[in-house]
Length: 242
Length: 119
Image 1 (cartoon, rainbow over the protein chains, first blue to last red):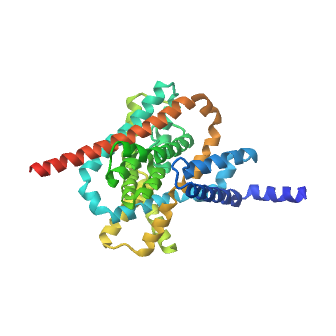
Image 2: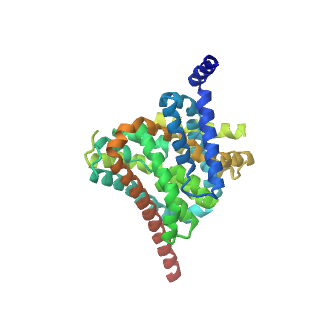
């Protein structure tokens, strides 16, 4: 019996099917839990899935490379999903056009704040240059942030992790913060969440309304472009080298 | 569904190709998004299949971040050493960014509303 089970495990552990399936199952379980709890923000589906998968990989002694060979099919969809953000943008374009000056103001101030505050705070608490550079693009969507990180001398895979954690923090805390600041306009709410917390924040913004989601999606694209331009300049300005 | 997915992939592909060939430091999928938006504007209509596929994909946006997030497993040692700097930087910076963006936008919206009332 053990031999048979061992044989099955050897087969499954080597094929991408196992971890692809497990990732989907864990995500569905997280969603179920999220719904059962009445949409409690603290049970963020991304955070839940990661919190379940990491111990599972450690227990089965599975390397991240093995895990990713299966999960990469999900990761790949980030590209087409980013392209798909054109659709809510198209639907809400009239509103976007009318809010153009506020959007530019929010984008420039938000994008600079995201980078400068992350670098500054981590530096104050003794972060190493590598960590500072990996943190700088943390508010931008994963594939773009990894590219920026590589360009300025950070660790792309560490940046990916920082990006996800940023998204989770934003998704959990931003709606309450915006409520506290008495921001009532869903367009403003969505855009602020998107600038700070990219796609994970956008997933949360779509729960507020499709208008908030559309503005959040718009913010992902715009902040990706601006951060790509500004991050190398800031890294040079602060003489950050890994 | 497959047709709509093909449209998304074609625009991503064109975006990536444009970025690589022009040397513009912009992300390929974002260029693809801009191109698809322009194409929809030019066409003046949104096919139902494309709308539905985009909605399905975007309603599960969270799932797509899980594989990269699990990458945290590779940084046990670094996180043990620098967790305080990282945790404070992530939480404070993210919240400050949300607040600054929202307040800047609101200030501009109010200012314009004020101008309109005066004018």
